[in-house]
Length: 119
Figure 1 (cartoon, rainbow, N blue to C red):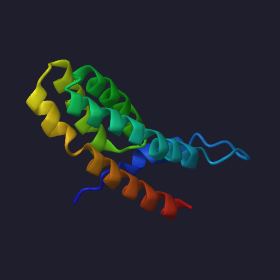
Figure 2: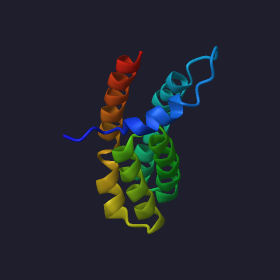
Figure 3: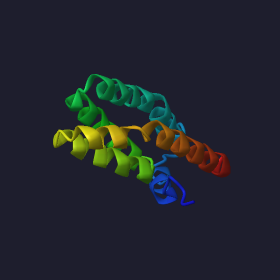
Figure 4: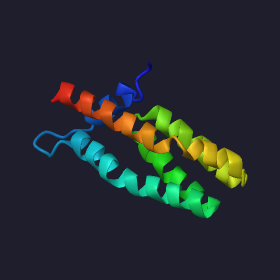
């Protein structure tokens, strides 16, 4: 299986680290891990309520934050979900939304492994 994260994105963040400052990469990864579940919950609730605007908005934010930490598979799924929501394609939204939480979990696991290696 292909890794759900792109280490190059994480390496790019690490290059921004300033000497003597808190670990920037760790802070960003921690933010992604703590903030993303709220977006996933909004997606889930939006799908349950058939609120595609909420789904699209949450998918847009999750798409961006996922891309930033290199969670490319999750980011791509969110891009597709956002587009389906914009097109008001209810069946596609439900199909795409079903796997978002699992992709997030896979991404977090890969991020944790990466962070353990660079620690």
